[in-house]
Image (cartoon, helix red, strand yellow):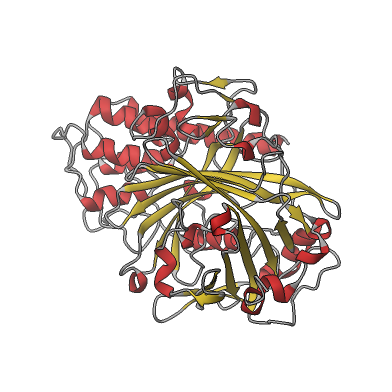
Length: 542
């Protein structure tokens, strides 16, 4: 315990010393000053204040701004630097080269730095830089209520999009009476089988860099692929941990406890649908008394089946998605169309097609809230941070939308429960260059829980790098007879800030019933052919 507090104290001292050394001077800030602040763990919001009060000594071109992003600066800092007052420095300014090839910016060694210019040198080495270390374990006191009047005191714990909702930056805004009540951070232990598989198999897992720029995972068997992600592929390892985050073998919502999805327009019109669903992990299983690999289809590791229950005119419309062990193989999508009495295979171009009536696209629609796969994407590690999150064993009141929400925003009311301060790994996820043509997202900033690896928040940008969508993902623990409390349920609200839409989805129903897990799933839904193959779609309405 003493060593833990010592590490925290050292990290805090590093940040304070860095900020104090720079703040002691009145000169404008150089690029190196900004990088040193970020490298020392100073929050972007605090660096913004220095930029606003001191100005900068350089012209912030695209390369400089990108170097700040790669050092962990958020969009607020980049915007502040781009619009900052430029003051000619009395000291020589050392240019910083573009950092396209590394997540760790390095100084231009061709020009020796002035003795009066702060020198920040972040080389790739066996010594971890500040962004590889855990964030300082600062916290908001338990019982604190965050409101529209005091939120700026706590904005360093808010993802970029959340702070924008409080600031009133977008069409969607926090209501004047909003309250977020902060509770204790509660550890979420993963099932013993998943932990044991991590210990047994993780040291075998490797990342493959393919000649066409794609990535893949080799030797994955189960559990967490990279329990201690480090090195130049750290961001991709975090993405792999998210992709293979713990999932029960079987998750189901039946006609008695359906998933509810509601879409709202900017004018306040709300339209809802209810779906039954069966999500099955067919390989890499770690739950007790479950085969680790289903011999019926050795190529597939995960399947998602869903069918509309309401409204009546859409009933029996069903969708099946197959996920392949080969990360280079795209998911296959099949849709059953009741009017045709047959199923149709989806086009690969449909990855950016919206789920009808929602603001989600196909690449959003997976239990961990990222569905793009790991073969077509790269991921850069930005930073370890702490954010406000609604997660864990919160109350079963989310399925009664729009009740228990601040409307029209669709934000959780305090009746849900207390928010936690969670450690997250922040990654920048993008399609690899050869696959970007025609793709909808320029990048997605994902805030992945450092303990469970589930996404807790996401900021998505369009191809012009304009902020497009922001999403709160409230992961929920559910009680399973054979496992205890495990991740399984979720409620998510996504706001399209360009088109002024919002979508809410919850595994809870109107009465608070949540997803069923493994042995609690009714026997008729534990049917591999019916709910995990296209042949099962052909049996609908027969």
